[in-house]
Length: 464
Image (cartoon, rainbow, N blue to C red; front, side, top):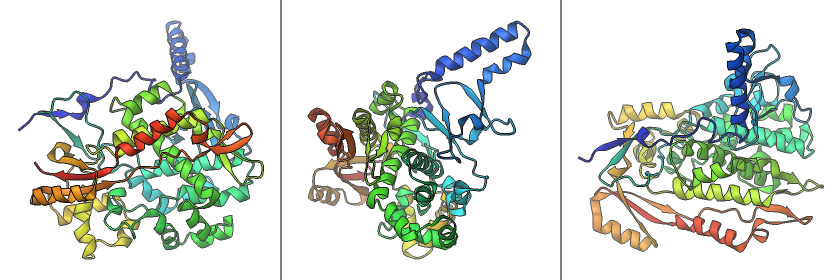
């Protein structure tokens, strides 16, 4: 049996403040550290608390345009305190590769509490964002060595992602002049856009793609938890209109799609970059504020269209997202066991032992408990992607012919289409609104298109 190499053997030796932080943060931290050390040497122990950074009250960060959301600068080491002088600590919502973090009090009466403390939104804290995906195989690793992963490898969840989407929506719309009355239904919708994600996430959606997608079941979940009527009465929420936005329709559906992509890219690339050296990680290191692209979203004066004000930063963001898809999300090594849970759930779902309703209101912990009950000892928490080999084919016919040759050795197949490189996203250029592909060089257009096409294929995973 080939030796197993532990995942931690391939962690990158990241400088404490370099990856994911604002480029000015380290200097600010070190300045506070030096001053605190000086005070300790001088016996001025009362001043040594400077090591915690400059104390900033939330009231200093308040913005009347979006009164529930406080924007925290990431360029300096600071201690943010609430109205009682208590550190907000883990309640600070971090947006890596950007100039801003956020704070919102989910326990204070208002818009964000209305959905942030609701049962379906809270459930998202127990829905893993990336399921059974694993980091790319380290470059240079001897083929005789395999890597074992404790699952899940990545621990960020749909709750983190969804809260970020709601925060960015609120601030973006407020900055662009939308009234509180106008933007409230949009923030509710964007914050809850993933509430119908089934237990087990994207892998389980493949059990029944037509019936288990979060977009199709968004309204059902809101109705199930009796949220539609009170939100309609209090916030002017229209569930049919919201459903169309979740499906990406209309101006605000397009805005949700853009902010959604920005948020998951920031979370995924940070967590991936902490584990692996890659083009994804390198781009983040060389462009540490690439996620500030969200601040470039501006609406036309009549508020009927929006575009990005910085075409170059938009290109860099889309390149980052493209690398994430190529190196990770659609990487056959990373996806080798992504369908593991789906294969266990499929027969239980088809026989009614596990139902659609259960998948839409329960979470990952419940699902794993059910699978342990029906498949004692088969739910894997310690996996090696090398258990499977794979081949990629250009046509479905070639894939089918290969499957016929291997017979019972086939584990599963995976058909991957090109992902959208988003070259049609709009930008401001010389007073006009035009697609990005008309502004950037042909070389950059071709690079994004080439990466998008690079993962397309018909895959066969099999046991050698």
